[in-house]
Length: 458
Image (cartoon, rainbow, N blue to C red; front, side, top):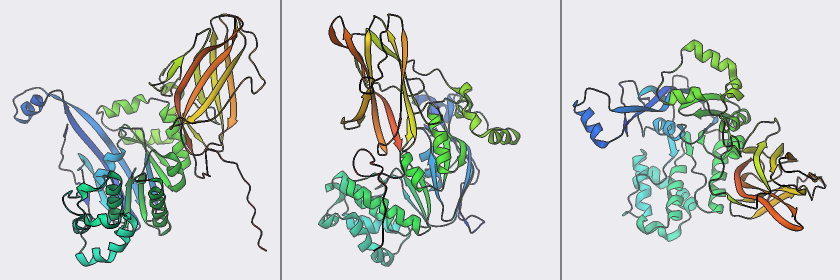
């Protein structure tokens, strides 16, 4: 892959407005893709009269501004350009077109440990990285104890980094990056390093930065963290900025985007020039209408717009079988992300291939470790579908409030019952769909007891 270069300005040292920390102005990043390495050489040497490459727009005319003291999130599906824009902001990559203006010292938690020499000891790497960041030895000395306390790797700091476990290495790298007093902190999925106790320490440091009024640019697939920490969110899709606004509003649009394929974005991703100013204004005015049902693709016949787990365990005698499973949020939108504390619906359509008396339709949630967390069925709920003849289709809906903790879960479906005098498994689909629970407030364990707390001063 080869990047296209342009003579446009790349990065300017400071933003004109002292209250502005960062300005991204019309940034476009284009890569040239070749089918064969020889094609790249031929084109570079001018040996071919025709174009041998195709252009990939990693970013297309992306603009946004970050004010001092703001925590701004960037979200989007895989391949939307989130990491690319961060690398351009930090100077790791140059844009093809557009510019970035930065006002303040940046610390970026992108590729932890980049620049570390594995032959050097941890202590030597601390000073090496401090020098690379522009600090004198005396300034690193002043921060050394904070770095060592945060990393908490003991005497291993005097050993070569090549002897470290992966956990020790990222702890040290994170500690170096987080303790240089940055004015602008850029985080790309870096708060999930190390064990659970170190992760808690990372989040406490993150919250401390936020309380100090530092500027934070935050990229994460953890929508709970985005909703909890971010003042404002930028939504990217296939290299194009789709929308910008409040955290909850953008998370809702992102959930819709996950189950709708936007043909306009696909065209831009293939290299179409950005829309004219008038078209941009119309698009902005349309707002969330861009996510209309008309843009929805057919999706999987069974799971609709939600991605079906390719490793789903499916079995059963098929006297009855699931033909459609849908997850709907409180607004009736098909989604794989549910906000904790809101109503949601599991809708399952079953087709009967034989006459069945009182089939049992069930669902259950597992965590990613395979532990079954909760579930129910039509027998428990005392609402059986009744007798069904061959050829019938019945849709069973389970409506409930989401009280699971924020995180990732797997939904399983089952249809069982009696046939020819014996209990049969008609159709089971284990780990069919991934469900993300978005939460800004978690408690201990798997689910929330929804306690009401009262404190009385005596």
